Image (cartoon, rainbow, N blue to C red; front, side, top):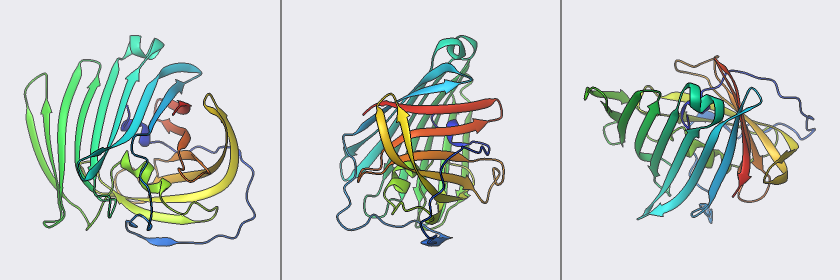
Length: 256
C-alpha cells in the first residue's frame, strides 16, 4: 500500500489560486542536491490515517532515521476495518539514500496483499547505470532478477516526498526529477500550485500544495498525487490525496 498509493490518477481539488509569479526552477529531469546547511528530519515519524470512500482503510507510518552515514527512510502500511476484512494489506519499505546528493542507494520491500507475499531488493549501481531488482515470491519460492537503465542519480517513490520537501516550495515553481522503484525509470514533474490552509487530526496547517505526476513511463498521463506540505522549515507532508483505479485514498496526518 505504501508504494502503490503513489500511483494515482488525476483529481481536481478545489483551492484558492496564488498571485505569486511563476518561476520554473528546474525544467530538466535531474536531482538537485540538498542546499547548504539542510537538516534531514532524522528521528521524525509521521503517522497517517488512510480513508477510502469515507471509510477508514488503514494506517501508514513514515519515518527517517540515521543508518550509519546514510539516512534510512522507512514506511509501513496496514489495511484496517472493512478493507482489512476484504483484502488484507501489509507493506514495508526501507530506502537508503546518499545525504550529499539525495540519490537512492538501496531499497528493501516486503509486500503482502491477500495471500500474495513478495520480498524485493533493489540496488542502484550508478557506475554501471543500472538498477538491479531481485524479487522472491514467498509462496512459491520463485525468483526474479531484472536490470534496468538509470541516469546518474534517481530517487524512489517514498524518499521522493523528502526530496520534494527539501526544494524551494514557492507557488509557481516546477521541478522535474527521475524516480525508480526497480522497474523502468519515470520522470516526475512536481508543480507547487498554491498556498492552502488544511485541517487534519494533527492540527490546522498553512501548506504548499504540490501536484506530482509522471511525464514518462507506463503511468504517463494516467497518474498523479497531491501533497500538502507544511509551510514551515521542515515541510512535513500533512495531507496526501490520490485516486486509484478502484477509488480515492486520502492520507491525513494524525501525529508526528
